[in-house]
Length: 29
Image 1 (cartoon, rainbow, N blue to C red):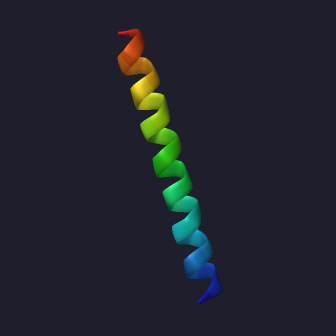
Image 2: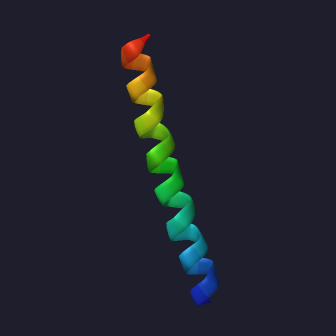
């Protein structure tokens, strides 16, 4: 159970990071 919740938190963190990079490059282009 703990591993699953940790995996979900990591996945959400990477998703937010991806959105940040996507917005950053979108602004540059």
